Image 1 (cartoon, helix red, strand yellow):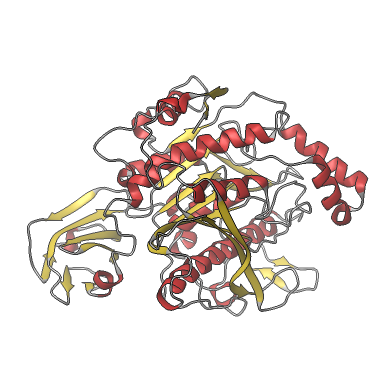
Image 2 (image 1 turned 45 degrees about the horizontal axis):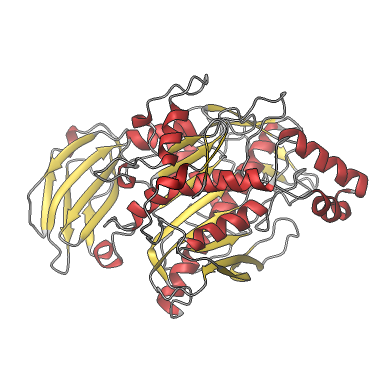
Amino acid sequence: MKKLLLSLLVIGLGAGFSSAQDRYLDEIFPSVTSTGDVTFGENFNFFSGADGFPLKTNVYEPVGDTETNRAAVIVLHTGNFLPKYLNGSPTGNNGDSSIVVSSELFAKRGYVAFAPNYRGGWRPTSASPDDRRGSLLSAVYRAINDVKTLVRFIKKSVAEDGNPYGINPDRIIVYGHGSGGYISLAYGSLDRIEELEQEISGKWLSTTDVVGANGDTLFFANELFLDADIVGGIDGFGGSFNQDNWPGYSNDVVACVNAGGALGDSAWMEVGEPPVISFHCPDDGFAPFTQGLVIVPTTGEVVVDVVGSRWASEKANELGNNDVLYGQTPYNDPYTIAADAALASSHPFLNLAPSEYKGLFPFRRPTIQFPYQESSPWDWWDEQVVVTNAAPLVGGAAQAQGLYNQSIQGSPSMTPALGRAYLDSIHGFLAPRLHALITSDVSVEETDFVNSNMFVYPNPANDYLVVKSNEGIRITDVEIYDMTGKLVRTENGLNKLSHQINGIDQFPAGLYLVKVTTDQGLVTRKVFVD
């Protein structure tokens, strides 16, 4: 923890840290081992049209670690949901320098890091706005399902395979750069297909029939871009072009972290979802810091309106979802101090109260000429590697050199040292928050035992709700929240096996979160009042 970034690079602010060494808080392991191309599932390949495409991940573990109950982090690369180099970028798979180093940094703090490649593929150059929007949403949806497959694979490996990676299945975190940040934010918030169907502007519905080159209709006017009968349900199962992987295990994670990227829809975030930690350059011209349009970096075409890290962080704090990251003692480490100073600075998108944006670290970078905006200073790449590897894919050495030259226009100060310094700041800011979360008594799945023995019914409800437990689990408190995060009913000091809540008919129709506290853990349920 030697380097920290504020508006410019600052060196040495970590010197005041305690010498005590704690897992997840400090780099307690000097070296890391990696295992490449571990198959964690298979699914339909939308590039080749073949089924049974293997999904693979690299796995990073600390050398000499004997712990068998470790937290896991899924580290997601950027890449515009297209193959590396063909996406017009020198980044785009799990071999990216920032992904390898991030995975190693997590492992040095005692995590097991999984860095997968996920499926992409969309039509960014299509003349049809509906086709661009629909194909991108489909690509993001497939990527989310691939990450869910990996989460279930990890949990299945614990339950059925002797826990070969030494994982605590209740302590899994999703972390992403760029496009991976889109996946991470959506992973924690997009949990019902209705969140797409009921978006007020209708942006997830096609406005026209979109016909492919072979004459097939790809999207139908006034219908949702995503057809669960084809691509599978929101939990990753079903669909004629989707393969079920590891049914019987949940997709739950404890936190979602994004470095860049954005959230597809503000309506997706609800009470009780995983906390959000965000890193973002406020001047990012392609993934907005507040709210704006996603732009195709290589063509400048508009795709869809989204909200950025500033909005997502504010909403996570308003809903109380980020409270679990913070204990009784305020953080006073140099990374938090730098983040708070950046939040309160005079940038047009900032001048924010740090208390309302806990978990957000904006990285201010020097202004460069539009459309080139520094948006991922944690990334770096080697010119010779890019030219050599890109040439066969983009039409020759001249085209590959052009790809590299264009990438430098958007990152003129890019160096390995600068990228590593930003990653140091990211991991330094993450460390105490994730440490607080992992070592707390928060339960992501409310433990399988409590979760499977707690019932809230009827659903939908229109008069009353019954909260009932089995196996002697004592219900102590029940809280009901609306989807704005407002607490609308509290029943405390119960000490019961069953409790009926009357007066539900007085609630406005809509979705509510029922939070049930028991003597053996916390359970949440979503209930619709009609």
